[in-house]
Image (cartoon, rainbow, N blue to C red; front, side):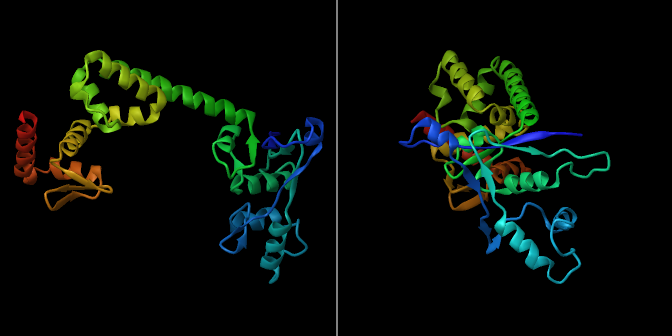
Length: 270
């Protein structure tokens, strides 16, 4: 079944007239990774798809030398309108256009190629991107679903000031205890819109209450953080926040938790 994508380049910006820049051709060329040229496939697929392309078979002693030369010499010239690549496969699972298929997988792994225009634009090292209309539609819909999920969770938690405070403690550096109900909701709404996936992850975390308490204890100075480590006095109670949650949920450490809460209460009265 046919499937076509375009390999496109970043717009060339310089002093030359637009017509001249449009005629320019930029080349996507080989790069080296760990002293070896970047390959579009792992060893198994390399043998599968380059067999018949090179002058020797995968069983030939010189196969590694030939494959190295192939990837080193691979160049894809890209003009103003980009390069169309046929990446579909037939009923037997074989590429309809083998060289297009090879170039596509080479581009997928290339550090200068973004999976879409947005990824290229956000990374100064990337000079090319893959335009796949089908994937772009799916990606856009995936983003919509994430926002819908975030909206659902926001409606749930916004009915509880305590839940909003807990999420804000985990996702921001603000002190929710000093915020009005409207400020809480406004702040949480901004976080939900800017990072919907992270918001949902925290809002649905079964350990949210403990995570929020850890952040509250850290903010008050009862607990300390060095890097990711969570420390109480001189004891590391977790290498990460998640480890600290396990520590505090352990009934054996209930005495320590009581002491922490007492210190927090003392500080709040000062």
